Length: 361
Image (tube, rainbow, N blue to C red; front, side, top):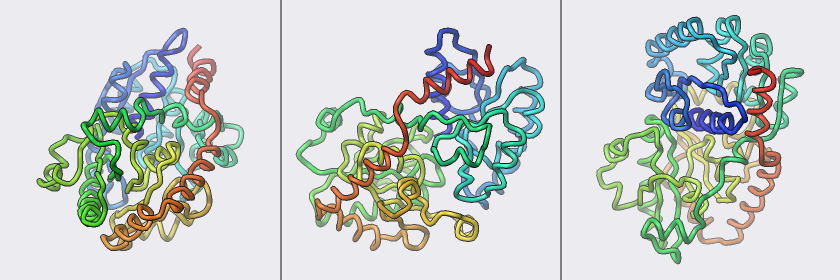
């Protein structure tokens, strides 16, 4: 998601009267918008405590490369996007070399509020994406709304999308969104497929799986060679897919907020390492993991984490929604309220213009 958010910001920069030249450590989305890709960092993208430990050698190497790049190039601004464990590690050194801002800062309102103090000390500005985040970054917070409001716009309506995929618009569809990282796919997709197989024996449903651009199609096939007998893998038009589904099974993350903006009901699931989950349980200041639930401060979308994310729980919960139109409508009403909390469209244009006027003159 950092690669995607960065690419949307670059697109907004390109719409300015005098677009800046952008170098990026990211992925093909940034590159496709015209950023000069210094290194593809998606290949070593990980989440979780034990998972990061295994990736440390490559992360040390990347940190050195970033610092060397900044020292040898005449830059006006460095923009950090999300990924706090790594970025806060390199922040003190790079902020002494060039003005540095944080775009989409770490969720200090969930855990590790001490990170806010470090960001305030070393960052010149913090571009927050939720209104309540401003209190954690006094004087340095710059809030214009949530950028997803500019981004989550299906190009095709339900009928157009389904027909473009050779699917029957009269049928109901469940989306499977296990994540965009290899580790998430390996942990969540087999479970989602089990649930789909069981649902298909009781309901006349189709199942749709968006192909995450960061992953090779073969990664899905390696997990289940029989995959395509259960679901239709769809290339591109992820927002059209999410908007066309009657219901989705989603791994917690940005996609839950995207689905909320589209008004698509969902179950939110996750399975991490035992160490990561214990840390979340011990340190988290919020009761929920899914962003729609956090924003509403109540569980409007059922959550199933760790051992609770199992076949029976997900099957029974999904079935209860699919067989009860009133439950679907009730969740849709709450999701509309979540969207209202995110501000007004036009966010990216305001952020890019503010960055240019403040740092790129």
